[in-house]
Length: 141
Picture 1 (tube, rainbow, N blue to C red):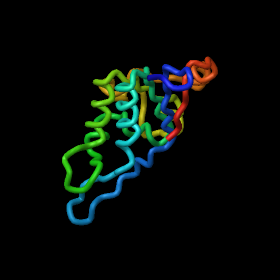
Picture 2: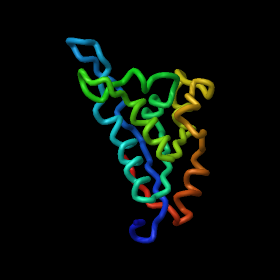
Picture 3: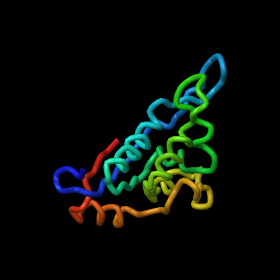
């Protein structure tokens, strides 16, 4: 079902606002937007697209340690961003962390990346090479 000759998609996730807000009544960390890119990537695999995601900047927070398990998508709902990422991984989505996520912060290091959620760390040149190959349709969120 590939549209316009593309069979591969890259989702470039620049800054899903990961800054959680705590629900006043429960203290739960909530971010309704953080699950959507992973949901869309999963849906694309069901349409026979090969899907890769490049996560950079502040969105890299979600691939560190157990951070995604702490952020719920809605108040009072048990589903977390981790659940969305796992769904994408099980569907075959490849998820990469872009180097600036590590370089721009002194909080996280390579060893903090959760290997269960991340297929590797790529630099700008590798990302640009993929983009310029003409094989990928790019969706920026």
